[in-house]
Each structure stands twice: as structure tokens, then as C-alpha cells.
Image (cartoon, rainbow, N blue to C red; front, side, top):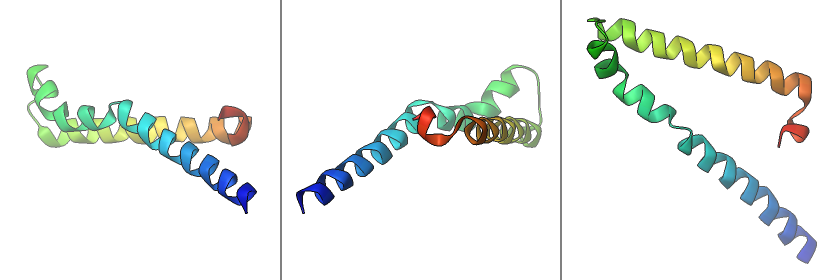
Length: 77
């Protein structure tokens, strides 16, 4: 029973750490302030700014996914 609790604690700890690192990466702030930043840069269309941020997010996710498949998730953790 003690082994199961230790194993569960390790899994929950890794999951919580990944969630914390994701939040600290700052993508939420980039998405939230993207319209005002792009407006300051001279792009008047909020839709274009949001689409640009969304496309870069998808592009980065695709690169990260392919790297995870090549390297293996365990070695990256």
C-alpha cells in the first residue's frame, strides 16, 4: 500500500509541476495583451493580431510535439 501512495504522489507531483511551468511560461499574458501590443506596433486589426498569436502558438506546439515524438517523453522530463 505504501508503494502505491509513493507512486501516486510522484505522478501527481510531476503533473502539478508541469501545470505550474506551463502557467509560468507566460503564454496567457501574451494572448491577453496581444491586441494592445500589436495595436501599438501599428496593426489596427484585432482579428489579425489574435490570428497571428494563435498561429504562432499552433506552430510552436507542432514543433514541440514532433520533438517529443523523436526524443521520447521520458527523456525530456
